[in-house]
Length: 518
Image (cartoon, rainbow, N blue to C red; front, side, top):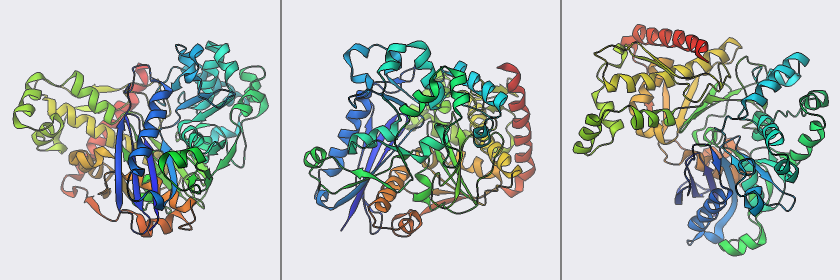
């Protein structure tokens, strides 16, 4: 028997699985909540991620299967910027930088570099930089370049101490191997790099700050690896520590929303995977590279070799629902849920009887808009309220806002000839919230297949590990042996088709109105 380890670093927690390569059976699993959670400033102590990686590895290798482990793959939230010093340690470990914000890990959802992002957009448009065609005409404050400029502007001493700038999945892979490799996903979707275009022009980079072109390329150096390629072997000291063989392969790091395509089998033209968590990721496969307005991630071989992959999604899904429960749920509803022994989410779901008749409307941009359009300065909205509006109506409006936001992205793609024919979904919320999944199907007017596997992204990473180890020749072959084949199918409510089209029309109008309130 051969086994592989898949590790998934999400926004609020991390989990690992040990999977049998013959059939995908999960033989061991473990979940870690980060010690400091998600701080309000979205600055993460490096110890949270380093310690989580160690705990996960110890948990899934402390069993009878340790000798069978052939490979490991890590996926993680992106772009989560890790500044690294000349000695190979993250700057957050340096005592002299312990209290310096720019020396900490900047989580993807930290948007304080918007000023630098706006500056980059303006200069790129002025110079008509070719990379704009791959980024929907925008530069996000979530990405590497604005975050690095922010560090350069705010703390030159920390910036001068940096020798590498890595995305979290690259950093964790580096910890396991000691090899400086790059993820094609991180580089293509978040680092303004493309295999055919390279980095942005020196004129653009130096136009932002004198000498920045050389600095950026130095900080971003390393061989770019595709998903399913080997980044190296596990360090000998780690092999001994975890009781593993010394020839364990470590696959290239990948982004947390991309591994679901493999575990769900959504790897062909017209197929898409939806990962629903704190935010959501909509990963779409298409035949060849093309520019798509308003969609911020387009790359050949970005997810799977041989096809062009579109990385899109929304900034605020599970986190928005959590905000509602924490700040707007009436105490009486919370008490009712407690008395019934169910969650507040389940209580509100039970109270929704005719979702197609909801008059309340919401826009899901509580954390800005990642795609369609890319504008992180946009904000959420409510409309259509009356004295008869109940908590479950507002909650439903938020669920419908999430589904409408996904439809906006899909329609922007369709304008450029990219149509989603099959949509598969995973993530904690996909299995916990049937009302949301039904709203997806009703509003998209498309069947939605929810994978019945608790750790879909981690299993996808394990499958990439199997490819990197040479057990399977491709992710498609790995899916045939290890992938999820059990789905809950949600189908559109054809009887109320007109009502759901009206819900989408109203939501679209409110999304347009939101642009007036930046």
